[in-house]
Length: 293
Length: 256
Image (cartoon, rainbow over all chains, first blue to last red):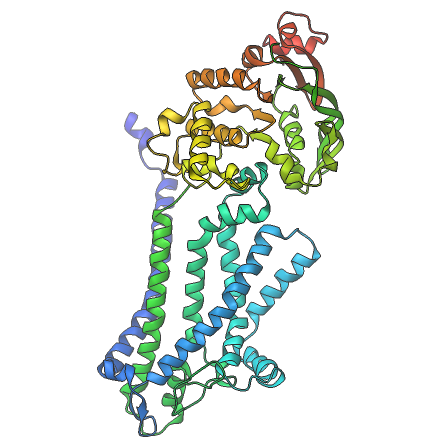
């Protein structure tokens, strides 16, 4: 009799079959994500791996960009990303601190949030045209690293703001109240309790932003990046080459490019992004390892 | 009643606290004297915590919380304190759920002195040791002052919270069921400390343990359903000299 109590009923068996089926389906869908990554990386390494060398990274392109290296483009991308960060990080963090720590729930705050959402939704080509109108022409920066980086900064600002705000909000509210109750001002509380505990999350967000900025093409091609430049940029008012635009150029605009060259450029670009992402993951692991509450 | 003076520390006039229009306490009148331990007892939802929050102007953190009536601290209306930070730094609060800040034990206790502008290590060391000792925590943490305060056990975090409140060198110490996460032996040690502290500050003790109020409080108020039913010398409440039968039922455990 006891055995009967625990024997599976028809309903149990049906539930278990469904459970197995659903589980398989979810695993399948999740695994599908790996495929595009493997195919892209595999193709790039297979077709472009042969061209990668120290020389390729650190020499100029020659012979109408069909030979030689990619040094000016690599350096240009670093310039563009660095200047964009210098602009967007302080601005984004300050805005996020206001929204997370100070902003009351009123129409003005809602307006700012609406602006952030809309800014995030603007297509990059529209940002590019805005950049031309505002920075190249109106402010008179011309096509320069400054104009291109400002355009990139405005495009990535919503990402910085949202990720920073999330990191700040992840610090429990009770810590703030405990601090306020002792007579600390908002800023004292932010500086001594909130920021030190949100900083790893904020950095993670910034690094993810870097990897996105590095790959953008549209916003820079009208504002500061050029097909080819015989000179390396000397300052932020110079034009520059950039990896993403260089990839576009050698893939579609120049005849007679050896097949492995565009693949090699793409591999370097994706390699940069992957290295950045690994750094970001390492940060997050450290954050988890040092969990403070 | 040693140490008591008739100086009024905190005067409450017709205090009403409501959340989104729903009253948590209404029409409370009472005055708390300098250097007394003032007990507040009462069942859940009696409005004890709302009362404490109003004293520390915590309504400023919560847009739904409205405070009406007057609270006079040192004879001055709370609303007239333009520097609310100075007000809060004079009032130490300890809530039932301990909050160890995610910084070292040392930094937890040194935070308030640092906010006041004390920078010298030697001076901070003295304050940290004194406050942790008073909160009955020093012996347990003196060898690991640099571990995270938020990783201490619940009972230790509660004593850390008390030490932090004491580091403010408050004029008024407000304790809301501090013993909820603390073992009975430690509770007794803290109770002894509170009796000593009475000579330095005024203490408001909200407690669910009526016997704790009896052990510590000079006078005790009984709160019920947002009203202050009765205020009396503590001993009177426990010797059937209550004016209201509900108070007697509550202290004798015959409630509801």
